Image (cartoon, rainbow, N blue to C red; front, side, top):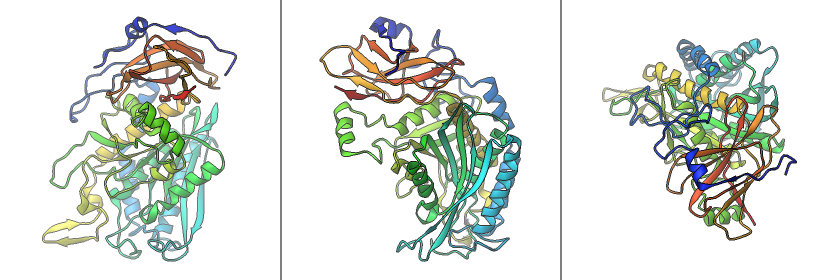
Length: 478
């Protein structure tokens, strides 16, 4: 605990008067927080999260700099390498994964130049030994990593990725044309465009932009990266993978160009038996760090500035599929996956061919670049909001030593120089998103005159500019 410890007591009446009612109206007296805003898109229902945060003028300006034409040029260049299969050539200058790797490195290095040395770009390589399946011989796996060092909290890290390897029907076929336009040149292009725009800025925390390899063979590149971060004790507070984010058209021809899915796990992949017992006792199945990350994305990126509806899916990933966020979840890092709303499987993992008059293959002609731009805006809004706000509160506990009808919360104070204080958020146990909030000040403990048995509570940090962190869900402390 810090010396800055006070014990304000918030009554039930005060809490409700200072917070938004379920259903969402503006939060009077809470700067930077809005209620449900009018829709700027024609998604499924146009709803907005109750505790939506208004985008700053700076963020709106950043989003306007993202360029659809550059995203398209990146995708077309990646497709031009013929195949980017992990088992394809690593030394052919024009075809194969090695040529794609070298081009991404050169382009990221060029994009980093305006940073004045704050963004560094490197290759992160290792030899993957045969796995008895999709890696038949020792194979070099290489990630291209661009790191934009934070100005005041560089130890806090956020990662955004796409995978640059591709495949066809036979997962071991490293020679056939595998254009991989949607899966996943789309994700890599978005990450590269984000790096280009944000290299000119100075976030408080560190942002890592990475194109990983080996995804189609077993998530190898991202798993290697996550393991390196864990071994180094890196404080990764959020990770997003963009995988299959290039098309708004379903297999039946219908379109949903204003929605992106965000897959977030409930029960943590890295949960220990002891943590599982706690989760079952308090009902925390919907309050994993990944779910809090998903709620945060809704709050900062589901708005008119992005033109998108973020549809959070309460699953780790789709049926029979997996993405590069899983390696980070395995290391107990909060992570989630962005994916287009309706997939067309004729244009994923398919040999390029025409069959009964139908075109198969992951070709660039099936991409929607205007849609990719909006997905890039969602990612950028989320990443910039994370990297300029305070970090997620640590060691948040709900005191359970005595049977009372109050809720007592404690946490560690953050070290950010612009930290203003904390807010307690609350929702019904059946509600998917936080609905009520009250500021408790620059303290490390507070008491709420509401029963902890009836609702869920969380704590988030606020800085002097009104930027808010993701919520930390408390664990019991007796």
